[in-house]
Length: 401
Image (cartoon, helix red, strand yellow):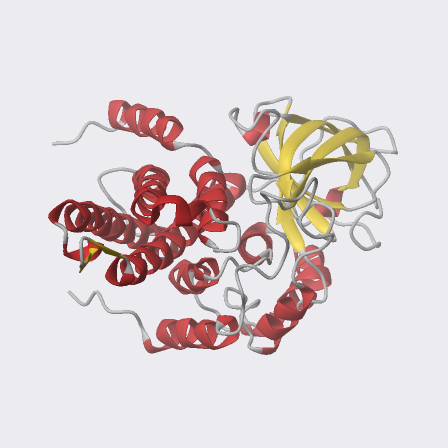
């Protein structure tokens, strides 16, 4: 078997390294010294460079100006982005666009995808539910409301009105509920919101920022980035802007989770490299501390963590990209990858702080920023314990052997 990346995937990673080469992790104020958000917006200049390098349209088909690549290519790019703490909604916008392409109706796709691939509009996803711990699709209720009086009908995702996103046509959906910690909520043009119908189905609603019935409340991440609590108060969404296809939300959630694992891997690799550089220069008792057995063993343990994070990441990304069957559903591989990513990135940054000593907490040195981002990634889309529980449920439902 051939486990190497394709030429196209490697080219995407190489292009990403070129774009991110000049990005400074400390380009914004330190979250440790800032009350409120570290910036009012994401890095728009970097976003434009990503668009120029065709890295915002990796997963889109050629008809939308994309490269037609897969989740593996996206994860390779995300890995490079997190090494420099790139402040862009690359994961959220790319994953949302991919879900719209795979499951959305033709009008929804034609109105949004090409523009998203060119970076003209930004998409994000409300994926954390009401509290950050409960399933996101259960935090919002969705019911159909036909203006002509036909209620309770089921949309197909292909039945659209004449207007653009947010303009009701022949029918509409009414959404009520709360989604917490929505990334880039104040900067994105559209939020993809999972919701639950009365007959226990999951749907995805594409909601424009500023849409009537949508209220945002500011929240601040450990990274210092501005998040948003999204409150939907009888928000009426056009039928054409609601995706009802089976499996759409589950697929999008799996891609988001796997992308988060890629970010954790890239961050961990950069932190371990920083630690190696520091330990090779810092001397005690006349010798670099890297030569001390206790230091070398801790660094070696974290290297093993990173390799486990890497192999489980690519297994999950491959299952999503290929649709290949396995002993467990693809969600099992995603759960394993997130368990390793959450635990591994936490151990890497903790060891780095320990080996750096007081220097690691110096706000003029970027390690504390990586620590803050690592904590955010550890908990984003569920901590290790949540995915261990999900994996246990899968093993119970699909006995191995």
